[in-house]
Image 1 (cartoon, rainbow, N blue to C red):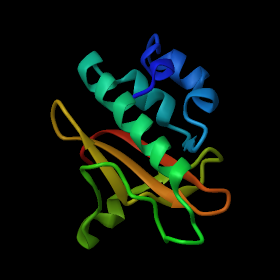
Image 2: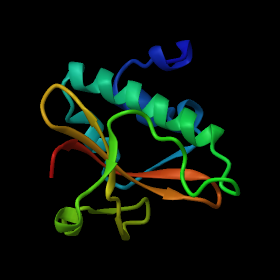
Image 3: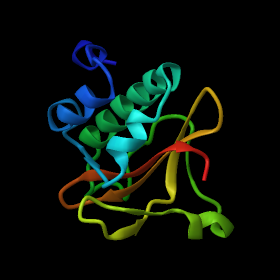
Image 4: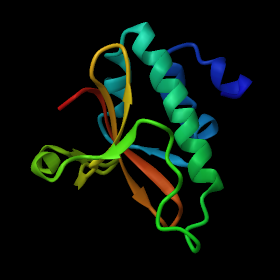
Length: 130
């Protein structure tokens, strides 16, 4: 995790500086409140995961691979649970965000979807397992 990302004062600071800190991540409509709901240990794990996710999307070459090499503990949701994984994008449109990373403590999840053009990850939800 780079030094600039360790100097995050909290959820409001992360959200305010999101474009600077995570240029390859887009934040869905509810992500700000999701971040504010996190306890400090979980927040620190989320920052670490978002940093890794941003870095992997930066390195990704969409013409060579259909998806980036996601950070460890990232999987697609099981088919039977995908119906639970629709979250509003920045405009409020529900989108399927079935890919997710895990964080602790507890059953924490960061749900997202991938966009190839421009190459981005759209964050749909951060919180306890849905």
